Amino acid sequence: MLILKFTWDKQDATPEKVRYFLQRHGVSGRLFKQVTHTGKILINQQFAASTGARVQQGDQITIELPPEKRATPLKASSGPLTVIYADANWLIIDKPAGLASIPGPTNQTDTLLNRIQGWLLAQNAVETLPHIVTRLDRFTSGLVLVARHRFAHSLLARQLADQKLDKRYYAIIAGHLATAHGLMTQPIGRLDHAIYRQVMATGKPAKTEYWQVSALRQATLVSVKLLTGRTHQIRVHFSASGHPLLGDELYGGPMTLGIQRQALHAYQLTFYDPFAQKKRQFTSKLPADMQTILNNG
Image 1: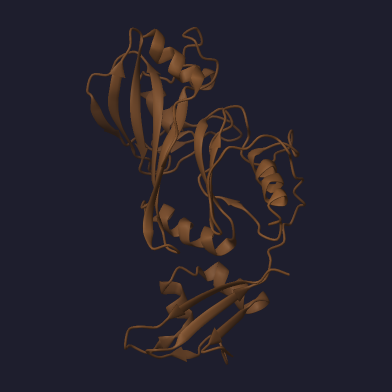
Image 2: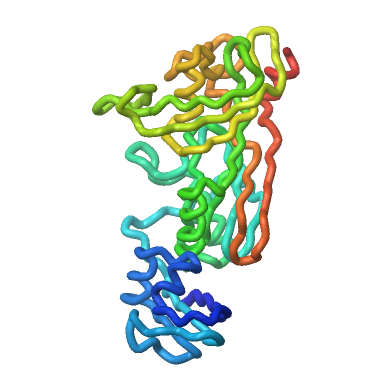
């Protein structure tokens, strides 16, 4: 059985409870509860007497996590998977358009998560439980960040909440922009039981920043940065501004300009890797369907 271990040395001179020390090092309240129930906390290689045990300068603190168990069994898929980067903590996947991120009522066997499980099986790493950190819509292509265990997921969830994880997208939108750079801040919500979202006064705060990259005859290529993470945020904001994404039938995008899915691609992903203690950045080329539109002008 694979036991995950993570160790820190306390360097500052202020005594504190071990739970607060771990919290400062990215162990969420939820993960701390899991550690105390199914794992171990060690101080200088000795079991912590309690969750209120105090640590001093020079102490070594270790947490041990047993393998996670999924509530619903996940079937492995042997479908193709483009792995851009892999280490003990992260996977960076280049997802094709048309592939759902996670299993749902109509597809339990061949989603991105199923294929990741199949890849892990081939690597003899099935005792880790992958967590998709940056999920993409089914018909959006591009980079997806996957945490290979729950502690990595806990650390990146904090970066997401603090807006320190930088996600950039290319979108091809209908028409031409009045300004080459802008920030859209309309709140986004949805009506009861609706599958689509919309700009509405009672919605949740949403911020989308964009830069024009190139103007085509009937469309514009823009680079987009998400400052919040609402469902369908880019699609909703551009639709509300009168410039829906090409191929985005749900939000009124034109379907006759060479693409039959929303013209949206996650092309760059930047985050701080707390294990390696450095910034990591990954990029992905435009897929063929979007590149063809640019080539045709």
